[in-house]
Image 1 (tube, rainbow, N blue to C red):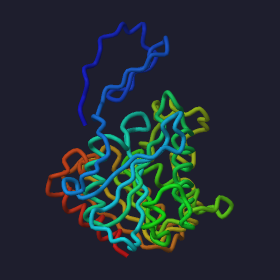
Image 2 (cartoon, one colour):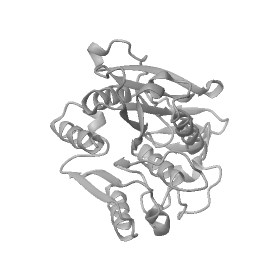
Image 3 (cartoon, rainbow, N blue to C red):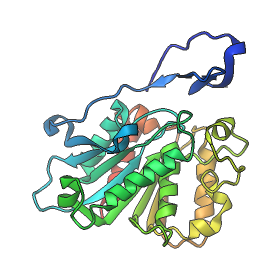
Length: 309
């Protein structure tokens, strides 16, 4: 992730300053301070280990996904499906960024899975719950291929809907959890994920969060199910996934919330397989910021093992 120059501004013109993510001006302008370059999908699997392409289920607002298919896939082979939700505090980043494209290329090539990296609308231009609604719309689009009659041939030909996983990092881990909650609701129907991977999950910081309050169009307090699932053990107990992997980092500024989520899930009565991997001296989303580091490689092996069923 790259930083961009922060423009000088008269304090009198600023309505909200959420450094290092964004600044909102009284006239409605928004400056965002962190940037990862966008890159096109790849049709050269010899370089990336995977083919990729972009699909849009709502072209007018660019809600869709980047799909990844391993170069080694056989014509009749059915593969696990990884539905991935990117992080970025709900306000920055993209499924089409260099950072996430490189990471999903590696996961797909090493784990031999199909990946659907979700592109959802960002706040504050599109306030919560837009990110959740968009992510659910893409999840339902993925589900439309379960009868091999969907709009995308990769999913029709190769997706094994008995082996679907949701995953994400930071705010994306929050979204992944909430998509699993929604999928667990019998009234919603849809995909029933086998597993859930939450890397450095954002579930608040244990105190009032001004950014969360600002980006919510429907703010309803700090025990909001979306933000604080630990306050809703009955919902945690109802998760349909059979296993959950939680990734923590010793110096991550929101590590404690991931620990609390683990403890709450364990105590809730949920009867799946729960695993935590905690990396010493590593901070928030270290595996994305330095994908070549030793611990990122160790985590990749853990993720590959988790997806191998």
